[in-house]
Image 1 (cartoon, protein in one colour):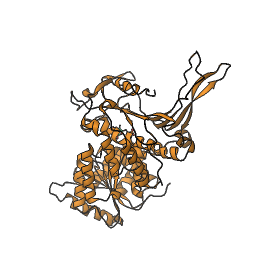
Image 2: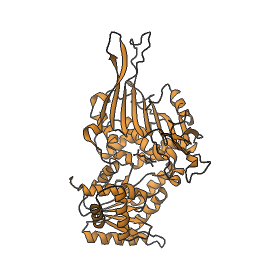
Image 3: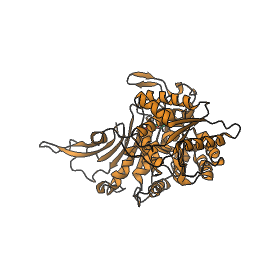
Image 4: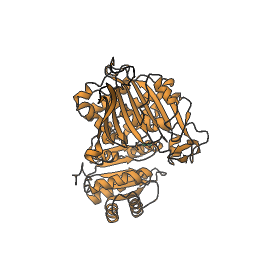
Length: 485
Ligand code: BG6
């Protein structure tokens, strides 16, 4: 059992009947409670439009928890009875938030809570503004304790909407009350990027334009759109994955060492990377969409044949792009980013390729290929890192081969915690280091504005293939190739 994190509070979830709450957050909250990490008196108040009462919500939550195999039935039922409440929110008459306020105060009183509140917006983008406004106008942005608001992604659709959403949020909440979530930052291996770089002298001393040739960031998924047509059609891979998750990886790989491990010191360094990125040109981007294909011998429909997707959709399900960061550390080092759905396997990794030796006397007439050294940071499904370097094959001849030295987290630590768990605990503890700051979100939208404003036409790739052939051109033009695997 761990000790509880933070002070007792009420955890209010907007969108409580939705998928994110039912399939992801409830199991995480249940697990935290089971581990003794939720402050004992803490209660969860689900809020949504559905006219449910506490009993019906508890029943629904218990069914979801059992379906997700979160725990034994008796424990699940007891957690739901003890911890869960529900308040329908109907703001047609404009009094919905006052009613909500009354309910929050009543539950707080019942449980002797000191007025600490977390509002978690597990909602679609268009509901963020009205909810922040509803909370603010009802005075729910302040209380006798602390108040924090957690906002899911996507935070905006582009630079202008992100700026407007930040302005609206700041009308009612101070920046330090706002937690913009990106679940990639909760992944242990993503956080380990900081330790890997800044607690190890030998990597950091090579981490620059003199020694690094290029960097590749790949986030590949085998899943397709998975019944999320409405959301994905208005999003696409750039908004769904690149502006947030992939960009977080980019900034953590490229940032300078922060002065302290303070949340603002780290986030300021990440913002500086985005500031230094060179404007992306149309020719630096490939947008792809999966067509019909096969995965593990199973025929798969194309994106346009998926339920709810228009037959002429030009939403990208794949994107590859190249960029440079114009600062002292990275001048002229290419960064290649790619992500896509319906690729052969789930695999997220960062590959840092070092420069080849200036001369190689091992290359004889037989032309043994001498590969440059590479560090691969594995994010999923395996977590850890691998170092590829050249060794001599024993024998009289001087023959060279690549060897991979591997560290996998699972071998040492077993299963790692879910990223959401880490992030929820941080919100409860009031630590915003792993959340995205206002300027960071705006800078990342600014970086991708040229693509959003002038999106190149989509090209097609068969489902189950490794993406459009055009993505190879993108990297080959700059003299490199994607790391297979
Ligand atoms: C989500 C995206 O943010 O991240 C999904 O909306 C994507 O489309 C998911 O599948 C990937 O997350 P993970 O942790 O499975 O890599």
